[in-house]
Amino acid sequence: MTFRLTNTAKTYPDGTRALLSTKLTVKNGEIVSLLGPSGCGKTTLLRIIAGLETPDLGSDIWFDEDNVTSLPVERRNVGMVFQSYALFPNMSVRANIGYGLKMQKLSKPEIETRVSEVLEMCQLQKFSARAVNALSGGQRQRVALARAIAPRPRLLLLDEPLSALDASLRESLRDELAVLLREFNITAIFVTHDQDEAMAIADRVAVMSNGRIVQSGTPEELYRHPNSAFVAGFVGNAMRLDGKCTGSVLTLEGGGLRLPGEGSGNNVFVRAEDVRIDDNGSLCGQVETITFLGTHYRIGIKGITPNLLTSIFAGQSAPKVGQSVKVAIKPEALILLPAGEI
Image (tube, rainbow, N blue to C red; front, side, top):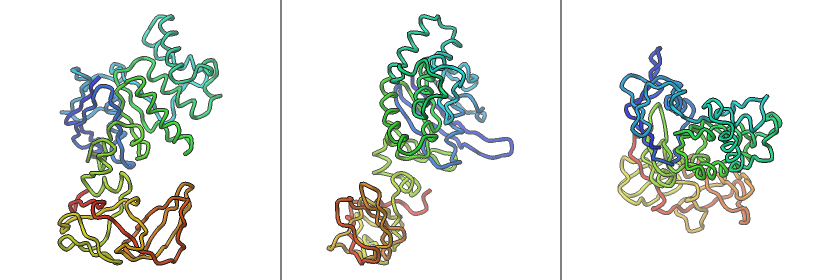
């Protein structure tokens, strides 16, 4: 199913504009993430798509050629997975998955067939008779996904589906979720504030800020070609180089950098992986912090620009706190964005 919304906005009775006029298209079988900080409007947009919130007059929501703007949630045929999973604790895994099919008044043989199919795809066969409150968090997440998919919804909506899990489990399950969504070939939209989660799962990411989508593209497009300072900082945590641009030279506290083009009037950003400690570097600084993160060291450097970070693999020899270092940044690694952008 192809999903499309145009001129969609939400203003609450007190005048709060939770969502500015927004347009979004999701192609058949595409997985799109709504990514942004808390309060940016992403959950409001998801609830409008589901039919749980009424948008402002003039909004249009299309499922293929059907305008569903005025349809209630129960008639939109969408599947939903929430942070809390909303499973029935007094039911078995099989009963939870089959609940929506019973509501559709399908025959018992068809319910059994569909539930068995989803149990297998979600690797839940051996838990089918178990009560959901006896499952781990990761297993409950899979049951919630299976229950949402079993009725074969036109669109699957996921609201922070992994946020209730601990960090290590969340990382493994996000890859599993990406595989499952593609195996089901279902059109899906999911909300997250976690950029790693969005980039690992989604075909396309729509970055939101202050009630609107500010940029949409593949994870690689957003990472390599952000259109604003906000996107550069939020996707990949690019660091702003605080200095003065004169022509094609950026002058910093610890030295100068040649820019890939005219830099006047631009914000200049760089990502940590493009900052290297190098004896031949043109910038001079001092190691301020060293953090061991298992696979690599994260190193904070002062005296060049505020909050400058780099990293080196754990197998390499790390500098010492207080040590003077030279830093190199290739001109082609710099991100130039217009000043004054969001």
